[in-house]
Structure formats: C-alpha cells, structure tokens
Amino acid sequence: MQVTLEISEVVYRYAERLARLTGREVNSILSDILSGPMRSTDADVPKLKSLAALSDDEILKLANLQMEPTQDQRLSELLYLQQARDLSENERQELKELMQIYQEGLLHKAQGQSEAVLRGLIKR
Image: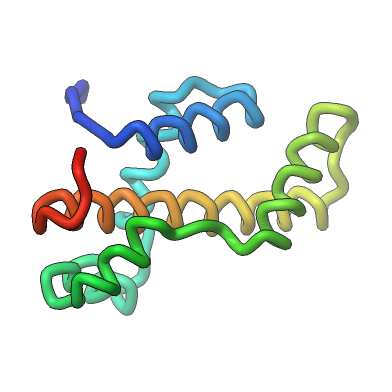
C-alpha cells in the first residue's frame, strides 16, 4: 500500500545515508524501519506505546538518539567491506545485527522527535 508521510529532515537524512551505503532505495529503507515494530517481541511493545508517559527530558534524549560510536564505526566498516568483497558468514550476521540496531534506533528517534514536536519541545 502506498502512503504519503511527513518525516523530519534528520530522519530522512539518516534513511538516505543508509540507502546510499546499502545500495537500496530510501523508500525501501523507510519501509523496513516502519515494519520494525511488527517484528518486535511483545516485551518491546510497551516501550513503543509509552511515549506519552515519558518526561520532556526523556523525550528530548530520544529525539537526539545516536547509535553508539563503536557500533556506528563497525557498521560503516562492514558496509564498506560489503561493497569491496563478499562478507564472511560472521560478518554478514554482524552486519544484520547492526542494521537492526540502527533501524530500531532510527525508529525510536523518529518517535521521540514526533512526540517532541507535539509537546512543543522542538520545532518541526
């Protein structure tokens, strides 16, 4: 199903960067990110539903969420290696896990930004 959404420039830039690094289309990346919660375990669902219960400070932290620098660096290395050669099975698994962390972080960041805009904590 095709849907038109407004997303923040930051979220779009992250998705665009990920698309360039993986050789995929931005819409495919965003679709995967939005599908992420559907793959989450039941234990993850309360976290996604409880944004309204978070304090303003917690929402701002979520809105500014960044991947851990060591994970981000390793993700970049693996994406580069993937373009240069075939990855080993361990490298493919590590890349898959890091991509999952990245995508979930991006989703949570987008949710935090959306809630922050709703609360008037940040401008669109």
